[in-house]
Image (tube, rainbow, N blue to C red; front, top):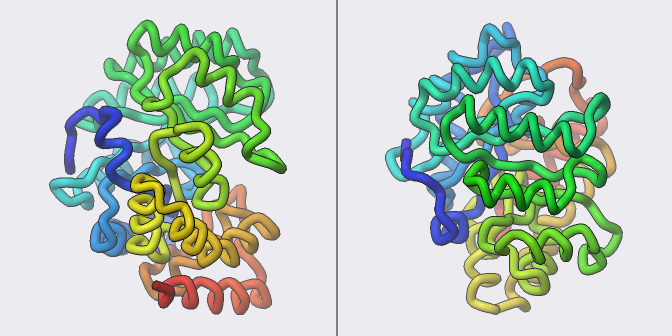
Length: 303
């Protein structure tokens, strides 16, 4: 595992994959199958792995947190950065910070809590987590009202932030007042698009964000890497062509559930046995499996 801090240049050099977390029949994290998926991602040029929502870190048992971090750290190749997550509740995240600081991960993403929180409280919580972890963290902005651009800017100024995953979904990604305000206060080099290939062209071309995260990269990492290279070189026609190739599986994820569909798609494409999805989620239906499997295999074969 690569333990060097993630600077702007390295954030821009790889698609940031957001994989599912493979489990066995007893719902234990499966070292072999997770390593198998990581090798597939690395074969397509992926060097940054972010374990968050798609890995259902929201519902990890506290008792399995340390062992899960150990499995992922061991599975990654020497050039691959692993970024685990913590939270989403404050108490859980603070206990996890103590555990995570014992590992050489360069950063950890704090999952956004929805419910009993205020923006000012989130700023305090993120700051305390960064202090307890002892390293800059990833701030994940997924919805309006979670934290404001000014609060994020203060965290950045105080050295608490490694980078920012921006993932507020808009009907038109070009119309985003929150993102424009954030960019007035925080360098674009610290922000990555966090919603896959579909809005990434708008985010990279029109807002100047530094990179993007992807779940569907798990199916065809080489093609997603080509998308990033096309975008970075200004070949927007090629980037748009590739974006449309990923769209059918993304459409299924949006129509059914992003986490549940990706979890099963990896298995149905024959890339790794991810096992059953962890509660409080549930598996997709047998009928949905047919469509998801066919779509995932078509994406795997695409060039």
